[in-house]
Image (cartoon, rainbow, N blue to C red):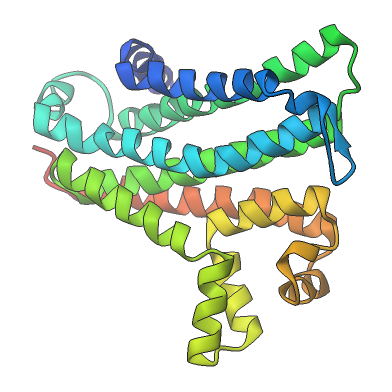
Length: 275
């Protein structure tokens, strides 16, 4: 355990010095500043005002930005170290492969989730100073959803980086993975269903397998409990899940999926030719 946490700490320190982390943290911090600057915290939409509207907008932007950032930066973790010859140096130290791998995983999770959470918590803190009404339930739900999304794509990123031999190939595979998941959202699924005569249940099943779609639907459900924006598809979801049940699914499923990817990556990493 000591080596695991030391590896995690070392990964955090390295990430804090990297340029990508400065850009990553600036993006999410800048989103909150821009939302305040444009007065979203003072406007009203669908009954949401103040910080509630700001958090709704922030979570929608995070869905588009967070996965690709996590994937691109994570896939360089194993593939980049393999290219740089870090494994040969690592094998000369009294650090087990499991401690190194899971230490990198935990350290990278902390570093990718922290800026997202701090930006959102900063918005809430500013609201407290201004005396605004704080939507604590919304804040807690969004924290859980962002944590699950970060964990999921971190696991996918570690799996891709383990399967590829170079950082360039890893980055290309990460981008394609993100693009495929992005394409299989509502409109694409609807088009496939119409063209191929798929049943609504099959289309919804495909949607429920896609972590990005699960996240998107959960964020919609928090301000649209009847999922009016999804049209008839909402009936299939609501008939099989209650609102609380689907929110729980949206948090648990991505974390389980990410963990399965991470475990697969670990066993492949353990059995592969490291150098």
